[in-house]
Image (cartoon, rainbow, N blue to C red; front, side):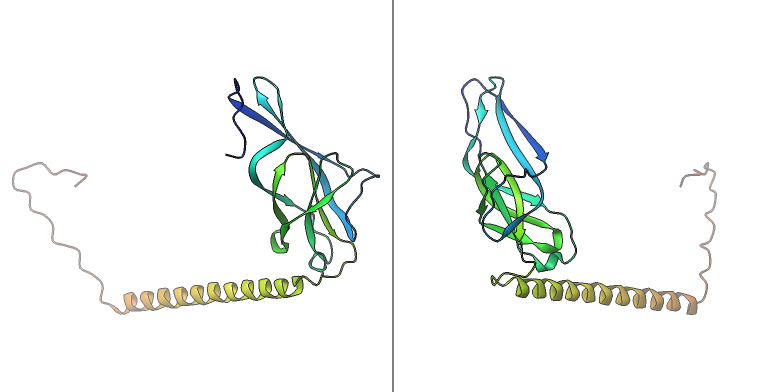
Length: 184
């Protein structure tokens, strides 16, 4: 529902073009570019009319490169209509996955900006990182506990099988004048 119907057209062609950031880009204060700039363009088919504005918000997710001390940076989704002057979009930074996501209503140029100081912003990102690390550690402990329990269960099952007397084969079926089916 993000793309409005267009008379006579049955589809939309979306093109995403990655480019290197230009030397004359303007970023919000305190941010530097992290990775490529992506240009999103769309045209209606078969008319070829351009689509620039979406009917409702669309969620945009961009990945950013892993750099040393990535945890020390705060990442933000950036948007620009012309590829030169970028503004910050309200976004969520998923440091563990190296993704930033936000809602957009227009197509154009998008990029990931990161804090230029290399120190966490006061928005609680240190707490977020600590929470993420503790959550992953807890998940790891649960997996290890499950694996140890499963190994112990299998070892006990194998011991109980070894202590049982061997099974006797079932008595052979008697042939009562009929042909035996080898698949039976």
